[in-house]
Image (tube, rainbow, N blue to C red):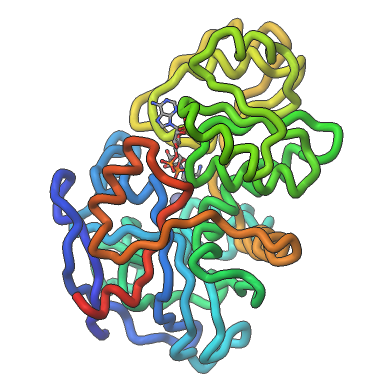
Length: 353
Ligand code: NAP
Ligand code: ZN
């Protein structure tokens, strides 16, 4: 075991602050990574503040961060996929049983024994729970370590590891492409990646936002139209016209207003995970035989496929790079929907702390 610098929350209301955490020495299958950039996902904030306590309690101290890009510093004797010096990524998953039906279908994200990058029981016993990417280094089983295409900017590539795969996976499953009208609800970290990816897949993309000042950005990011969702007239003009809608909203909102925009047999998928339950009118689904579904990140093979797709299309996240010392300010701005469109922490800043 060795100690590494990190930022943690010590309870649901504390600011994040510098600390030191243990990491295991790499086993034969492990890759040790010096973390260069880590994106800030709204899930980090939900977890640090224990907002998902009804589903998964947060264990403190909590070290969030699951959009990790770094450089390999050491590999175990059985590692074949990566070598020292490689630029690699780690997303929301660091382990799974790799034998269950989900894992056999390359859906490690759905494995009942899956281990999230932070706040999951630590199978190795290094600490009570796993600690994430707001830290100097991390040690991960090689199966969960991804290759980052060489042409991508690293600060902008980090958010692909969660925001990228979480939007790519449902868009791909919905066969989004030319001739499909796709709605993206909420222009935040996930939403702006959803726009870029759906546009690259060839779809007609409409952004729904509560922030009228994001209109120009939405068009620049690849949207064909922008609808301010609090404007009932603008919403009504789109009734019954969408093949697919991806809901990326982090807070309570009316999903019926969006279900009513689907064509018959259209599908709306939730990836946003608000703290409080959402209410659904049965009629929003019954009329039009519409479907409502959910999606959780993606499997490891699909995550690599998404990274390679982004490499081929030269796609990264629009990031505001910050030092780790600005993390609490960044959280406050995220709550106010004031992120353009992902914070990416330059982890070199942790060395000076
Ligand atoms: P984010 O960057 O904070 O973006 C959320 C966006 O939602 C905001 O930018 C805002 O967009 C909109 N919004 C916020 N409050 C709203 C409200 N009260 N009513 C309507 N719209 C509102 O968050 P994120 O990192 O993209 O994450 C979004 C959600 O997805 C979070 O709940 C996160 O935990 C979840 N998530 C799920 C998965 C998964 O696997 N399913 C993975 C990662 C994250 P506008 O300003 O455009 O309205
Ligand atoms: Zn995330």
